[in-house]
Structures are given as structure tokens and as C-alpha cells.
Length: 341
Ligand SMILES: Nc1ncnc2c1ncn2[C@@H]1O[C@H](COP(=O)(O)OP(=O)(O)OP(=O)(O)O)[C@@H](O)[C@H]1O
Ligand SMILES: [Mg+2]
Image (cartoon, rainbow, N blue to C red; front, side, top):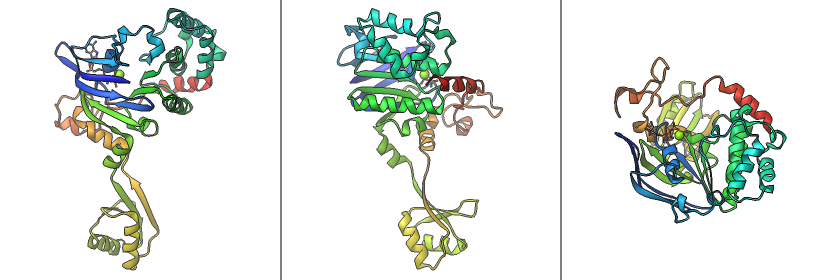
């Protein structure tokens, strides 16, 4: 259990974390979401005592991190996968962590096996791809068999297989009753993984809810219909209290009526249907709308990603939120990472 109460962190004029309060519960995966610069990493650093809060408090198992006798046995955290001594082999990196935390040596082989790095255990980590480094970092978090796990954007740089592996790992850890707290700036990453989500923007809490509620509240149900009698169907839908809009590809998008009702309305009006399907607005869209006012860095029209000159609600804020893609060079990193498993 992680408890954050009135947590605030200022860096000069910059309020990185602004009066945040939330709890992260055991037995669940809790997604920590927010656009770039929202304060996710800062919050995690505060949880780990790597930074002191300007105000408020945070505890793990009711204690401040620095009061924990054997921190790695209670909290496993991965904030920066590349923050390892590159000259050390994967094995020696983990061994040094184990020995300084009174963790038996055999755990090193166990966690190397768990993350699929046994074959490269004797290789220096400076040659590791980002994906391999993420796996090594995750091995480190598991070393002390802790009941609280925290990962900062763990899927960055991973290929699809690696992403699925991390998802399953997080779910499995939560199913064992552990507290799993994982940050991301992509809702789509959390959609199939998280049980609860905490959304922040510009350091402030925007939403703290279950993923189910978030989906129910934010994805409007739309029914897609294809028919050779568009006008007749649009009229019938309007008469039944729904709204139909042309979709550009010859189909109609109906809102305000459930799928079954749209089918019945068409039948009653004698309208022939070629397709009747339910679609949902993507959660990514809902997330972008939720955090639109707190996106600090927008892609410029020239694609340079320069900071937004306008404040919230300004013209620039109406543009697409910050580009979240990775640099092109990352593709090779991902390809290499894929070979580690
Ligand atoms: N040591 C620091 N000194 C000054 N400003 C800082 C420092 N650390 C973070 N900030 C600022 O605090 C804000 C929050 O940063 P943080 O790294 O926590 O965001 P984030 O949500 O992790 O973003 P990202 O998705 O890009 O990783 C940013 O505006 C950042 O520039
Ligand atoms: Mg961050």
C-alpha cells in the first residue's frame, strides 16, 4: 500500500507535483497516467525518498521509504533502466544489489531466469539494448521479492513481445497480492493491464478511478450502419430519438440508441442493412481530452515539438497533444531487445 497525502514538489517557480493525494492498493495494477511533464517520475522519486517533498507526505506500508529496514525486500522500483554501472555484468549488477540488501545469492539466478536474461548474465550491461536493460531493471525490482513494485514507463523501447511479457508479469504480480504501480503516458498501454488508474496533469490529480468506470464514462457508444437507403435510415433514427451522421465512407454513425434498437428501427422502417456494428470511441481519445488542458509540450505544425507558446485553452492547445512516438532509431533497439527472450 502506497499512501500519498497532499504531496507537493516545487523546483524554483515550477510546481512539478501539486497537492496530490491518492492510495495505491495491493492486489491490483494501478496505472499512473499523465502527459509528458505531468509529474509522474517526480512523484515516484518522492515515494522512494530520492527527493524531499516541499509539502505533504508519502508512505509505503505506513512508513517513509527511508525508515524501511530492508527497502529492496519491501519495495522494488525501476525508474531508469539505463542507470546501471555499464562495466558490470548483469549477474554482478544483481549480485551487488543482493549483497547490500541481505538477499541470498540464489535469488540472482532466479530473477535472471524470470526476466529471460540467463544467456547474457555474464555480459556487461553497457552493451545491452534498451529492452534488455529494462529486463535487467525489472530483475532488480524482483530481487527482494517485495510486496510493492513500481515501474516508470517500463514498456518504453520494448517490442510487442516484450510489452506483452511486461503486461502479463504485472498482472501476475498483482494477482499474488502485491501492490503494482506503473506509469505511462499512453492510455492504450493501460487499457488491458490496469485495474485502477490515477491520471495527473501539470502535477495535479485529474482522475482516480477504476479502468472499468473510466471506459464506461469516457467511451461513447456509437453504432455503425451501412445501408443503401441512407436517407430513410437517418430519418427513422431521428424519429426514434437518435442522431445519425454520415461517416464519409458511405456508412452512418448512430449515437443515442443502442445497437439492438438501431436494428429494430431499420426493420420497422423497411430499411435494408448491410452492416450493423457497435464501435467505441478510443480510450486514448478520452484520455487526450481529459488531459488536453494540461499538455505542456505540443508538436509544432512543423513537427519540431517545440513548447506550446499559448497557455491552456490557447490556439496551440487545440492542436494534437504531444507526439508520443519514438525516434526512428529506436526501431533497431526494439528489434535487438526482441532477441533477448
Ligand atoms: N530536478 C528538476 N529541476 C527542475 N524541474 C524539474 C526537475 N525534475 C522535474 N522537473 C519538472 O517537473 C515537471 C514534471 O516532471 P516529471 O519528470 O515528473 O514528468 P513526467 O510526468 O515523468 O513526464 P514524462 O512523461 O515526460 O516522463 C516537468 O515540467 C519537469 O521539467
Ligand atoms: Mg517521467
